[in-house]
Every structure is written in structure tokens, then in C-alpha cells.
Length: 69
Image (cartoon, rainbow, N blue to C red; front, side):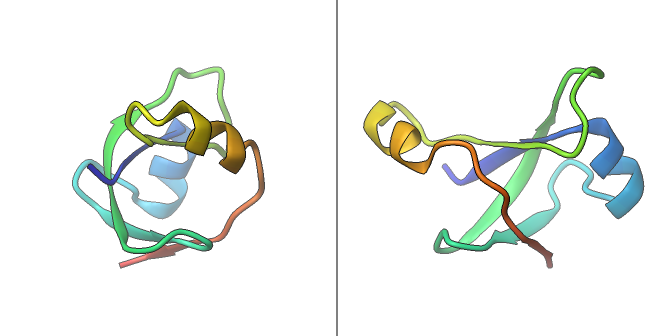
């Protein structure tokens, strides 16, 4: 599954509502917005990488560019 969670400020600012498709710089394919994060988070996304912990740790925390479809 290629899904992400977005912070609430991004929902308001860019219209990243549930079901919206986005392209993430550095990752192949399109990702679907399926969840929103807690109110304490600002300007963040959370990428679901399944049960592959090694892949998630390798990706780490970084700044990215989102392309809204």
C-alpha cells in the first residue's frame, strides 16, 4: 500500500484531503492520503512503509517535495 498521513495544516493549506494522490520526490509511484496526524504536528507527512523496518530506518527523517495530482 502506498499511503501517507498528513498534518492538519497541510490539509488546510494545500487541500490534501482523504483520497488525494501525491507524488513524493525520491520515491516511485503515487501515494494516497489516508490519514491525518495529531494537532501537535505541523508541516509533516508520515509515509507508510509496511512491515519493512529496515527500509523505514534507511529513509529516515528528511525534507521532501510533494507534487499534488
